[in-house]
Image (cartoon, rainbow, N blue to C red; front, side, top):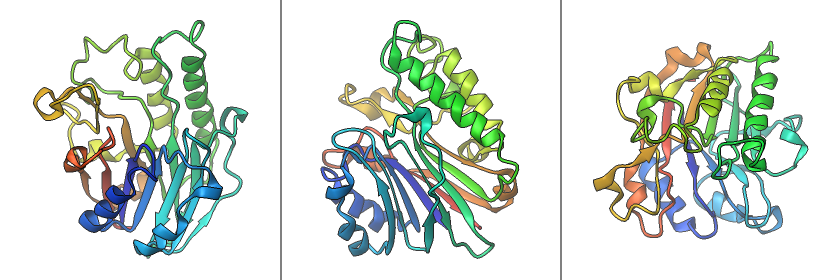
Length: 265
């Protein structure tokens, strides 16, 4: 099973890029974040034209939004929490049919957190910390957490080599100690970092490059904001992981590159 996660940064604007992604990587499941389209305007027909007969979405105008396209049958898990009680379309959970049994898949778009890493003066940063804390409590309380995959734009680059400069970004939102500590606890609630299963922690690994860097490849000032986690029982089935960097050079690209996990499930 090939699972892709991608912050597409506006689905309707980048629909041609989604078509290219499907053609080049041929994933079985595509998880999108920042679709930025309300449900009544969601291009569901396009998913079917791309060969994804199963799809689910949760969106709002101009902001946030998540979607899952699947070639395998899936069921939306309606009892997923409304994080921080905001109803802001940042999470979707589905159950996929797989050869080894059902796989629970969580697609997240964690709040970015604004620019000031102080929860007392920046409500956006406070929301981000509260969101991660709530997600951690939820998964830590799941005695039945198995055969599960968690993907998405988690907006935190936790490790030293998940950012282009650990020292310079310690006080920049996405790599600050309060965020990193909370992400470590979330990961420890029952998951394994599948991307770092393939790329050792002492090697650079990025999935996002700012639009401000005109020559993003030359400067390579990236961050790993996109993640793929699996429960320990799925680790033996991990086969490959790819950050599809070529997508960052496509016409009118997202600032995120798609990440694909290949998994025997």
